[in-house]
Length: 111
Length: 114
Image 1 (cartoon, each protein chain N blue to C red):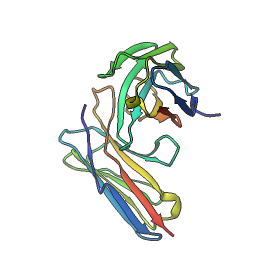
Image 2: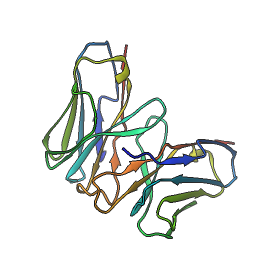
Image 3: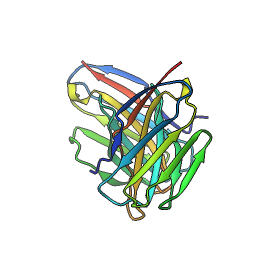
Image 4: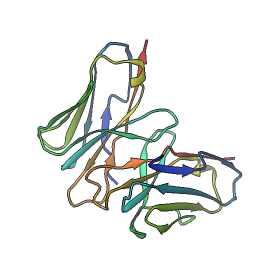
């Protein structure tokens, strides 16, 4: 199956800093999702994007659907310790029956 | 109420044993999935059922057999467990087989084969 590449693979940042991560694919997608996985838990949906160029926010999180439809970006502003976790992107098509997940970005926030 | 619940949370067993993981969702979704997350945290789809019908069956050893008695339940039975089966297994559900609104995941079952 397809695998989407996320970068960076891991990030260590100070509390209060902003975070940027991205996800790239060799295929075009119609839907991009961003999930967060905390230790010992399953991934939880943060943001869903349905249109090229779309910018959507959820609190301090903002995600963008790339205009090429082959990438997506997630920004976290003013990070706090509870932002720690692994962030996954996932891409899907209108005719497909599954989402393809990225390789994940592990975020550590140092108080 | 937990939307997607899996049992057990942890499973430690010896090589060669047979074990099952159970999953239930109370969201009224039509489609359920099993995902495997390896030590590098890659999420890989294994199976998908839509209204009790198998619709995704990725390249998985036939020692793994899913069963869906109804659309709210999806179980995973594993025969002759091997060391390489050690991983976290996630159950998930979506409204229908075109998961445009994404998946709701359970909290995972950590399987350790010794």
